[in-house]
Amino acid sequence: MAKFEQARETLISQLRSKGIRDERVLAVLGRTRRERFVSPKFEVRTYEDGPLPIEHGQTISQPYMVALMTECLELTGDESVLEIGTGSGYQSAVLAQLCREVVTIERFESLSATARDALRAEGHRNIRFELGDGTIGVREFAPYDAIIVTAAAPRVPESLYQQLKLTGRMVIPTGGADVQTLQVVEKRSAGPSIRDICGCRFVKLIGAEGWQDHSG
Image (cartoon, rainbow, N blue to C red; front, side, top):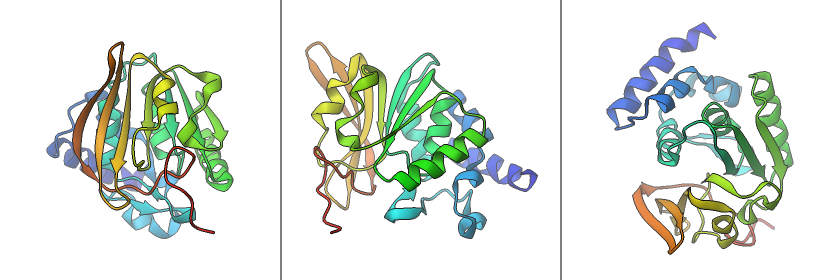
């Protein structure tokens, strides 16, 4: 919608000022209509650089964090990417424009369905939608060039690491329930190489190799 064009331009300027340098990532963020993935009641806040609530206690991530995590993947266009946590579908939309194929997994069926409808309406056809425990990945389509985890794990799930190609990289927040560190994990022949990027706060990654679900 035309009324959001200026807001998107302002957001991109903010992302540049915060250190995002990948021009492909900035271009994609500049044309991805975040309003299609935000609840109508939060429409006025669509292009604020902050997270917004969605169903099931989840969030649509802060645009800066979407940009940063995507930049850390260093995508060139021909990759197969596994996304853990479909959520609203906004991160999926960004990835779909930067790689060959996205496999995205979500544990809440209603979130997956809503995201699928929004993404298809936006014309994205290179996304596979899966339901299940994201901590164990999607073995059927492994190995992946890159994995992005959009919820916080206590540690790097071994199943996800094993589904990376050699020289592939994973971007994941790890740490405690309240505060985490965003990390880039590269798979090398000698073992994982882990680089800390910044502090962050994400919802918990629930599953067999993540946090337990105590919601009852």
